[in-house]
Image 1 (spheres, rainbow, N blue to C red):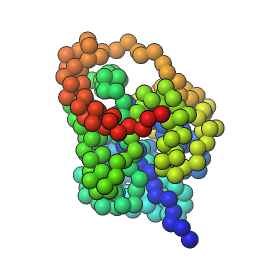
Image 2: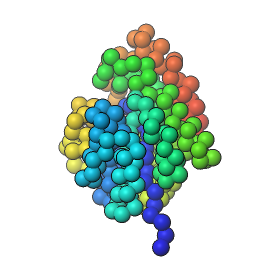
Image 3: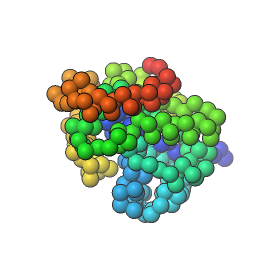
Image 4: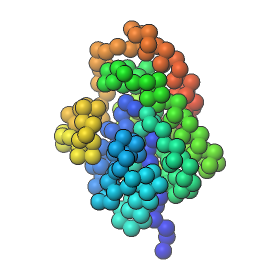
Amino acid sequence: MSAAPKPIVLWAVPRSRSTAFLRIMLERGDLEVAHEPFSYLQLDGHFEFAGREATSATELLDVVLDVNANDRRVFVKDTSDYKYTALLEDERLFTDVINTFMIREPRGAISSHYAMNPEATLDEYGFEYLRDIFEAVRSATGELPLVIDGDDLVANPEATVRAYCERVGLEFMPEAMSWDPGRGANWERTARWHADVAESSGLEVKAPKRRETPDTNEHLRRVAEHHAPFYEALSRHRLAV
């Protein structure tokens, strides 16, 4: 009997359109999907997944691996605005999980993040730590992890998702590319951050909203300048579609 496919983790910079990607994974219907479980664990000290509660990153990884092996393949989306020191010290993250990454051009991501949380710290914008996770995976596995770009996702949704699925061993399901508008129970607690996805029925390019940007706000300019090199380091490896 062949081994079960590994669970998939998508590590994403905040405001990269990663929840829209997660919505596609939910719509498939064949995956056990977790929305930012390690982030919630950091905030609350516990997280329930597939009816089982974990109180540490190690326990949560135990649950993810067990569900993946015995029930359904697992897809996890999480963000890089928190530090996951204990998780990155668990070698199973590198040996037993497929780690993938999602970026977005930093000026757009940072403007969107600031509109939601003007008190965000420099680290919370997430590009630097996402690069750190990427390098940890590359160092441990000796392979280049898969990187997708949120701008590519909305510009070429089917090609991006199809290529992602091929790389991680999923069947591409074109019917999962659209959905009925509505909030997802997976992100009810942080619903205000995902209003665009909740109101949508699929991926589409929208005109930018009027908001502060690095061109109009000196603080955001400094944030963008700090994170730009980390975005560029990851963008060099992004999936070409």
